[in-house]
Image (tube, rainbow, N blue to C red; front, side, top):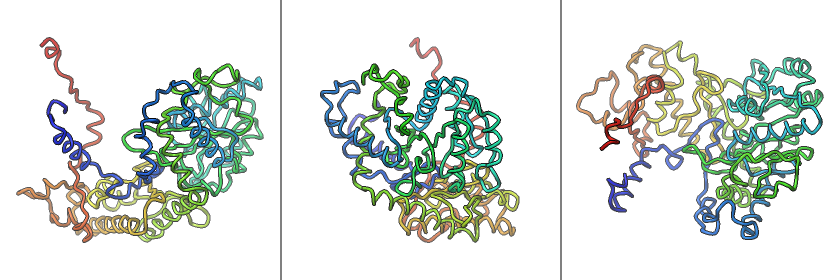
Length: 484
């Protein structure tokens, strides 16, 4: 690209072309459930370009980083306060690395109590996929705990397995609110059961956006948690990172937090070894979360949590006549996200979750999370960043899609050739001389009147994901090219 674009103007235009292909938060809501794709405010991002922060090497002598140290110390205190715990380590570079660090802290705690046999990690069926992987990485053995029909942890199964492994139980890994988008009402009893048999409770902090200011991991009885700063605390989440996954721990686990040669490892012989090459992970992006917390303050953080929960329940209410929410609490409410069950449409119209996800692009929306944690479903999380107009725009799109599905069910639209199976529709297809479909161009591109004012065009049509995954194409040049 640098050989092709030889002027700043051309490079600018190339970058803008790439941007135009991205259905980003700048265009519309990104309702990815569990990912918490909230606004990353410009004000919070600005300090990343300040030279006094951006140009420091990770191993700059501590005597020369007084400003950084003050911010990192205050952020650690704030995160510990938000979680209700005693101390915080900013070192883990991602949520998965936070899980690993938290489990290694638990492992070190058991070793300090002369209980090296405690290696069993109980993990519910509803857990994030990284949970069992992290447990194995930490040298533990995974035992799966069942969930009931409402998506909650099966208490009886939990108690039986905790009792069975009483002498070897290391911990329970639990997500709260659950990955199914509901607050587990028995969470305190769950934590007490684990403690009863000598284990520790690791709380996955992926869903902290439904907790901040209202409750916290310490309140429910957890011992350690990680925080996805690229979710709840507003660090950008797209493009694969960078993320941050600090861990916060109760007082009895504080001595075991990871150390680093840069921070004088001789100060505490009980600490686990470093989990990241840098002492504070991706330190520069911690400035974003620091600004996020300080600008909102205690009341603002709590209000954000309330609005996130309100927004999810508003979407549930607007869609409930056409879509079934898979899991709800006893009061018929969800937490900050919801799972809608679209599996019945496969039987009635041959339409799957992927078809709805692709069709949403035609309506100007990034797809929700598809088939996680339940295959054939859509997981929606609006966050607190979206106002009522945007929530309504999203709901109107899904209700319109339900009408399109009904046309297939009634035989008005073809099962194989319809707007959902062929979505998304790029502009080159819409404007082509030849139109092979049984429905109109207008129906494909402008299913709702509002799209005439605000339309996103996908750069490509539907691709065969399965074929792409299974048939890798090597783009390497032939070996003769290297001789030349």
